[in-house]
Image (cartoon, rainbow, N blue to C red; front, top):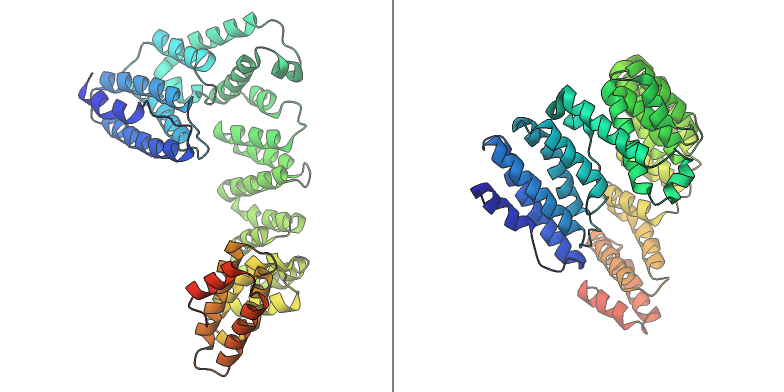
Amino acid sequence: MSTLADAVLPLIRTRAELWRWGAANAHGRQMHEAVDILERAAATEEPGTVLTVTQKTITSAVAVIAKADDSSGIIGDACRRLLALHPVAAGRARMPAGKLVAWMIDFQFHGKVDYFELDPVAYAPALGEKGLALYRARLDEIRSGLGPATSKAERWESAHSHEWFVLEWNAQRLAVLDRDVEAIIATHARDRRVAAWLHDTAKALAEADYPDLAIEWAKLATDFDNGHQARAAGDYWCELLATHRPGDVLPARSSMFVRWPSSGTAAKLHDAAGPAWPELQLDVLARLGDSPRDAVLFALLTLRDGEQAWILAHNLGLGDADTWTRLVKEYQKHDPLAVLPVLAELVTGDLVQADARNYQSAAHRLRTMRQLAAGTSKTSEVDELIAALREDHRRRPRLQQEFDRAGLP
């Protein structure tokens, strides 16, 4: 093997049992080190060597992930980095089109796993016109061998479901490569029954450099319904507008907030408003009033106004413990004693259920209370609260232990 192979392949290959999550993660991080070496070598080493080692590395990496618990996705990400490098390496090494097409077909239709896709758009420079024609011909060959096209439901239930998936994926990507609007719409929007498909169509049209059509389809996806897919499409619609029609962003963000009032959509409206924000603030906060958590988080994280967040939390009856915790952490800088009653309520909530993590949280809050009250008239009140809790929960030894660890009296 080459020096490059000697440096890379031992970091990929392993005989270790990777069904254990921790072992798989450790090996995955090692695989990323191997990809780092390959990526650096791609710019300096002999192209043929880089291509050969890259292909061997992909083969070994796929064998690894086939037997690993990759719940964290670390190994999968390393594999994707290798697959992103392959078309670049193939192009630099001037890999013969016939061999490259054969490799692509074999990987997609006869590979050891079916977790990954190859993108013909990325491979187009390496394939060239003749290679692309050959690749399309091989896909047509495979398609014709599957028999007449059936309904989508029947395809996924057939013995050739994987082949149909790969063919559809390639049809989508080749439509983008061809900048064929009709084909992009047909392959991505399908029967237009799902907002995400309309969103996919918009992204494909944008990639093919049809920004006006992309904006139109993103809006269609946004207006599809009030679900999470439509909301994601709405964000993409606004991103397209920011790039191509910046004057339309503010009304678009305003409509997004009205449909999906939340701290997140309010924050994006705030960003889009710029100097016009003061005219919108009262209406936005009023609309957020139906969700105390969103109103408080918006004031705290976007407006950076801890005092307003504090007032909203009390006026709106905030009941979310996590949000109160974030708010207390900020507001104690302004008025340390004011947060003591809130912390006491949070401690009471922690102790409703017997749980070690809850005990740790309660102990941490009580220690914070003692620090905030130190040297004030509230010191004795906090210590009395701790004594009362110790007495009320005297039959919870783990709680007493956590209190002791926190240095509580």
